[in-house]
Amino acid sequence: MGVNNNIDMVSIIRESLLSGNGPRYKRIAQALEQEINQGRLSEGTKLQPHRIMGDALGVTSGTVSKAYAELEKTGLVRSRVGDGTYVCGQEYLKHRDNSFRNILMSDRAIDLSRNTHISMDDISYTSDTLKEMAHAPQTLRQLLEYTPETGLPHHRQAGLEWFKYSQATGNDQQVICTNGAQHALLCILLACVKPGGTVVTELVSYPGLIELARNLGIRLIGLDMDEGGLSVEALETFCKSHNVTAVYCTPTLQNPTTRIMPPEQRQALANVCRQYNVLIIEDDVHGALVSDRPPALQYYAPERTLMFTSLSKVLSGGVRVGYILVPTSLLSRLTSVMRTTCWMATPLTHELASRWILEGVAARIRERQRQEIHRRKEMMAPLLEGLNYHSHPDCPHFWIEVPETWRATEIEQQLATQQVLVKSSEAFAVGRQAIPQFIRASISVADNDHELAVGFQRLQETMLEM
Image (cartoon, rainbow, N blue to C red; front, side, top):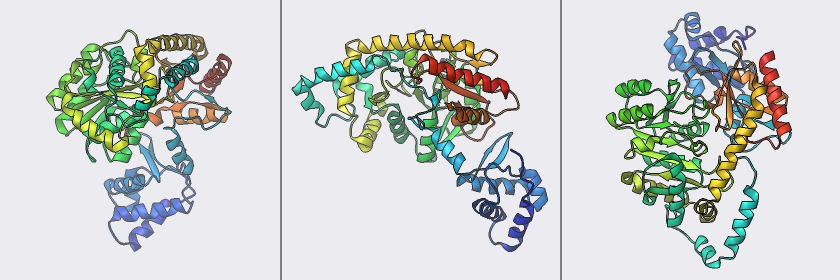
């Protein structure tokens, strides 16, 4: 996507500078906004670099930077360090919104874009458990009433059992039941981070966090990563010169890079957070899939870590069951937020999940999930021959490097024309830094082996031909 040479942006902006009122950066922004809205600057047009535009207009590059930033606030342009600033259109905005969706937008496409639980025995288990509950009227009566904000005692106990896969420390009084992981993260941010506060995370991170930060007015900063995930050195350097409220981190099966942080790096990260009084928000949603893993970050800093997880990647996404393990000092704050967001997590679905966990059903489903992930990935690996990718045996997706000279979004769009859906690294990008060019391809949604193989075959062919 190159500069549209048919449009003389410089002449248009120069005229606005001479005739308009107000700060020069606003006049530049207003002129560009008018051209975009009237269609003379079309979607995909690359704006001139800051210095070149500044020289042409007789203003500083800083003035141009502020003008472009004004446009970016309203979604009219997007910028990325090392790549440039591009005009957005409705298609781009639609693409950005679609990058954080939980349902397939086309029933004809092969969906490699989402990580979910693999549907196997969950329907029969659900049916059996609901029948059991139907024959327990006293239990149903309790579940149809208001319950404590943090959940019924045996629901919290089930949450603590689920956290044992993470080797976390604590007791059931520290567990808060939530309506899934996204609700858990919302509660944590509302309780612990004020609007304008700073949260740091990995350079590429969970899209749900990015969306929440945008809506809550939280400053989200992406930091460099190393082979273990979030760079402790980058975190310490940033904390030395900035006031950081919290660090959001996925140390086990980092989404999307699939990295697992080693124990010594977890300890070092915990030490930095103690030194600079930074809270730790630990995402362990995928962590329950991993059998041979280090203890959670929460194990190394239990007094400042808010750890959350859910059943969505292992048991079921539709039951909307999640848990937060909260330091005792923050319990009242989180309890208050639970009241203001939904009064309580849904008792019926938590009863269903609690029975599965406490009766051993969840453990059986988890093992079946892990076996099926291994089987599908072993089957798909030969179809990725010739490509550079990262993954972990227990991870439900591949993180595939895009060939040089191409952008991940171009691969994503090309595959979409072939009815194959993947996610580009752009969907996980935090801030405006240059990001690695990868796509994420999942093995968990396809209905059958044939569909999965067709999707990965098209992916390989497209990436090798580009």
